[in-house]
Length: 87
Image (cartoon, rainbow, N blue to C red; front, side, top):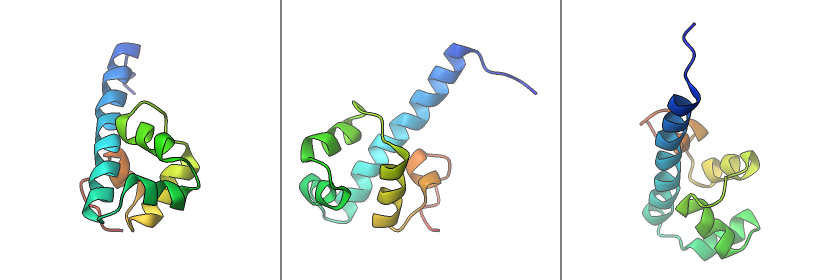
């Protein structure tokens, strides 16, 4: 088994993290929803949700799961582990 260094892990995380933040924004925009509407569905403020999209706040697992359900996709797609948005 090959282990990644801390720096390699950080690069991998940033790559997937970038996908995640971009994808939740793109999914929201494709659904013609505002940040306020998504925030209401998630029971958080628009500012908190905006911070998720900007990558300024980690997305809790419960929120990630809720976003996948809202957008009828998988958490793997949101995380950038697959390019297939279909379940």
